[in-house]
Image 1: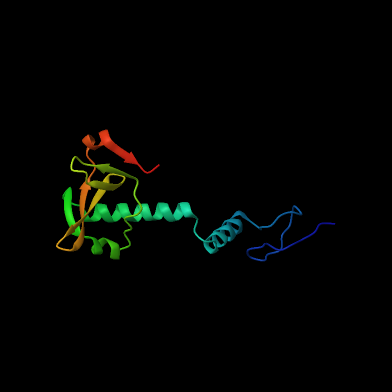
Image 2: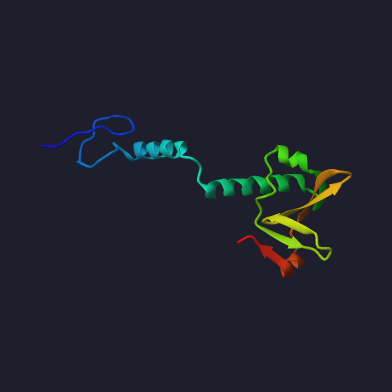
Length: 132
């Protein structure tokens, strides 16, 4: 005698193995997708998503290779300066933070915080520090 159960996603009657949980691969995939959507985002995903957003914004606002922009413009779009991949210190001791090839320097001008956006240059590789 065979035991029949229901698919845990669509409730269709299951036929076959006694330990079967899904009626087909599509139900299994849909169930797992819904299950993962309900779980809180993993730390790795949060960091990765923030790095992607930071890079996208720096790329979008740095069309000229070196640009100065008010920090609140990027911050309002979700930019978070605490997430970066590495940093570079110039001869003046200023620290540029990079998200891959796009970097920024935090600077105060007339009491307002601004970011100087730059692109990675080959000469910077000599004294780069990684966050790893």
